Length: 325
Image 1 (cartoon, rainbow, N blue to C red):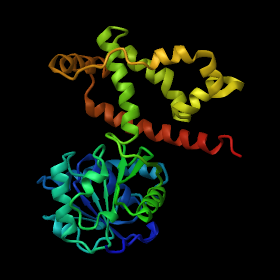
Image 2: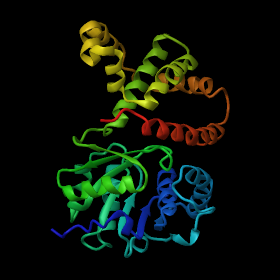
Image 3: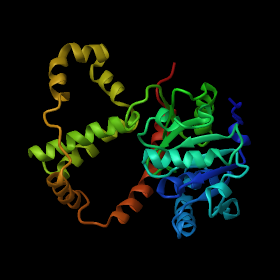
């Protein structure tokens, strides 16, 4: 099997972005902010115009977060091509973002591999397909690794790195380093599981939120308010496990579990696992209007992205002052 070419992240000059929807356009924005040439492909006829508009809109936030000091993106570094074969020619890395469909992704990976050198790296943004499944049929599966961001990808720091059974450990180490070079916070997901790590965590809470809504525990607005004002402020500073540890005071996690373990077990035991049927979809559609206060989704997205910049700067400041050995 061919040796994988794990260049130092700072030496990467070009990346092919295959699929420029919201995730691909976010990646392209970040790559351009780091001065990396982007060779893009997307079958949508207006993909180029939409991607350029996305990059322009994302740029002020990337500047404020210190990712770039350029006043405007250099669109000479962004090229769109009419075929995957043209987009992947002579690049250092191929970054894949097509729909979450196993057969489609395998077909695209096959096309990618047919047009790149044996050692060129392939990273995928899949949010839940195990990489071992995607590697099946790859000519050189050692070079394939999942590098999964979170929406909006150019802003949210977290990126999951997930390796398959045949991924070269050197590629995993490179992916972790590459993510840090982009200014992100990587986590290495060591065990393949549906949804990787973070989607499992977030949808455990979503499931309980939906269950509480169905059971009539509280209104949709109050369920979201409980997360926003009760859980989110602490979770911006620390994860669930450290939060539980601090809840035990001097006794730490063992102390709180010795004291309230049975109660906690009853709290985390599912009472209802909602089934996503037409009735639930209709109920959640009404709930969405309530939590959005009848405002347009695009207005909320604009507000979210603007406010995320302030939140992320505060989070970075807090991280810099956290207790250290």
